[in-house]
Image (cartoon, rainbow, N blue to C red):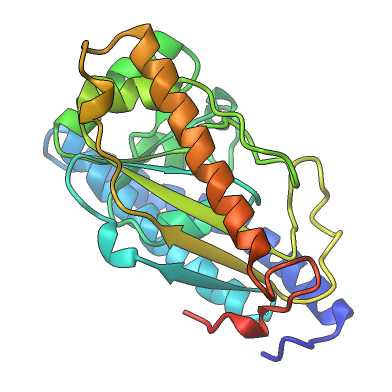
Length: 272
């Protein structure tokens, strides 16, 4: 599909994508529910459910790219899917979750408690063993246990979508989990060009051209320097501040590169 597809077509494609996502969640609930009835320990069933979500998100990503709504590019994908790996990412767009989970075969997530009340999402989030943010202490304990058991986890430390043109402000939960689990900590910088589906932005306000989600997987962060005195509140604050600075510096460096400002087109980024 051409990058210059007319706006009316991309609007229809966006509407079809959202419709397919809702219907797909309902359809996905069937195999995920059946998976929960299969024998095996709870972690094994959760991993099977997570793989089903992974495949469904890959299919949805293919649909959106085929309709000419978006493109996805991933740099450093070989650094993902490690055992006991905590992946942290900024969250500029609603769709970047789909792009990231589509790269991770078995990934747990911390999700809003309201998703267990939504008929479209209740089946997938429960069947995949995702962790609710309803109780913060229990949330941290479950995430640490999952990582120590060799599982992969995705956390968006901001707790909500990134606000455009503002530096990130991370909550301390991600740093607390990383230090307590003493796990692999892998940063993923997410960029959306042009910006779309940001917080409080309706789905029908589509950008002037097909947008690009670019996932840039960074090198693992060494946790040793933050653990000199154990997992203390000071260590958690230091790691949180370090992560904020890391993501802020990468944003500033990207914006200084030629062809990456607001007027740049995604022709400069080859498709994945």
